[in-house]
Length: 280
Image (cartoon, rainbow, N blue to C red; front, side, top):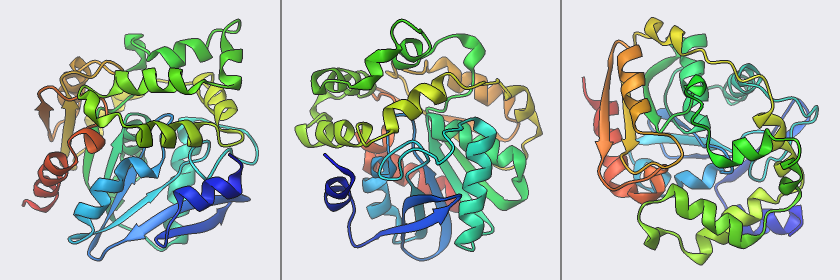
């Protein structure tokens, strides 16, 4: 599916585009109230938060974007990827749309970016939600796609991933297999194969990923750590690591939920996160 077809299928009346560093960035900005920025994870896109946006836009201004290398946005113009580059890019995006302070939630890689954003400019973030967040890379518990992408003799696998393999990956990240519909698989498959995205993932997986979790002790804002106890990509024990390292944090562990609670249990997770954001 070429880019025009992807745009036709996976954008709607709420989709917007903004140019940052020469890149045409796809984002959505819905609702009124205080800003809630949502950051997706690896192999994902802003669509992972569709249900959350529909539920939360009545109380918040919900903003989400396809990060460079993902979704409709596609690869960065210079093919450079690192955690600091992503963080700087997100703050550029927020400055361009005139957002100063905000609530922040991120899943997986998006969770890692979220807490790094907080470390860089904590004064801009009111509260932080980490959803099955990455960051403890010294644990060497990498998801399989990262291991494959980091292995030179295997890396060509990412020239094209058959839909059956994409379906298998998706089944790993959800505990409730009823969530894994053909429509869901089609969306992930199509956006993963947006021109340049697979190459971007290989570059991200092979970038210098440096564990910076020792800095988490500096955070003073309230942090909610959300995890599914059936996460097969990032072990639930990482929730304990974050809770130990972040002073003002608490853990919300869901039974029988996998790596992406926003898609697996959208109503429950959105309600719990909303309560956390508005409580004194």
